[in-house]
Length: 439
Image (cartoon, rainbow, N blue to C red; front, side, top):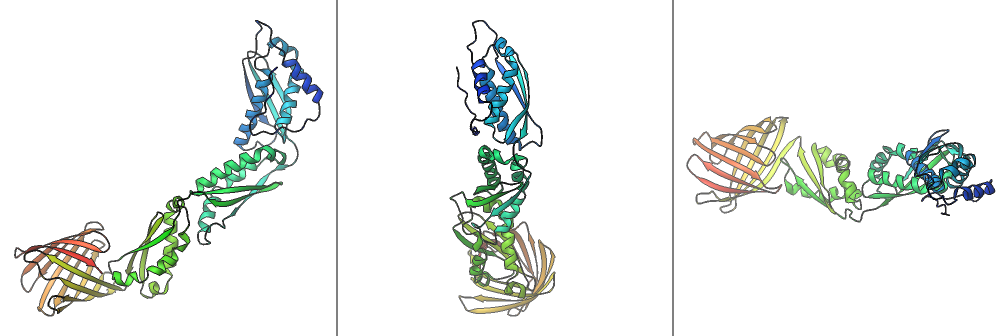
């Protein structure tokens, strides 16, 4: 006689009513088939629910339990013996499943015997049932500034977690709670990459599913760096604000890299909102845009430009047989209109300590094109010029010295926020390479 094995994940209840009938039925159907008799080769089991069906994965586990019980009782048994015992057989199937699937009882059984048999089982609830659930999140592992992002991501999946216990008998938690906790954990890990959760269920007509967030990944943000980029503010001035930006980005420290990567845009907006509210940014009407390069060392990339002023300090190193001397250039401009800038520019030649001044105006035709005119005091020369940008890092510049009737053109490539290179040529046949360091 083959023993009856209980399916994985289902815990049998203690023996109760009809124990004698149960054992008698097992003895009857466990008889060794006579040689040459037709036997049951396969059983198709179908499970239905009298009231609301539980979550599909819980229903699937009940289906597997019923299939296992019926297979143990029928497969390999002689058909003529089973047909003679069919009324008792149905009682036996119901009695066994009542003990295997705690929280449910068999309310009806339909059995059709054959080489391929079929069994339909109707299940009803036993005891109180969880009709609905509330999902609560314990996010103490996160900085308070990050908690709303995680809460929002979890609330988007809360209905899936509530469905796990809706229409589930409280008694069924005896075997179903590990299933519910495992699925809820998968949902949380999908919603919040790099995190996992401990699940606690408080049973009742309105149950509570508590999710206690924990860090799952070992790869977390450990260090924070800052990079500035601006077309209107000298880098020397921006670098002074690096400690403030690092302080604003402090909530990122300790976050799993996978989570920060998934929430990169939201985290950048969070830092940018705090940065935009700082006094210097409001005072000088600076527009900031924050981006993140996420890793164990995460860099906060800040693009900052003023709506009122245009300033830059550059060092020009000219290389070539007929190249001019190195020069330091300081530019300060004031926007009198969103597209019009009035400026003054100072050029200092370190070799000779000579200095020259320009005054001029620039008009922005578009985001990628501008024209301007300037007057140089030392040379008493008037020049007109234009700039066209081809993307973020490549631009072309042309300058016409109207006094000397000379032309200078340059093609510029910006390597990074600190360094650019230019190939310069003039109408006098001079060509040289210029390296520009943004100070």
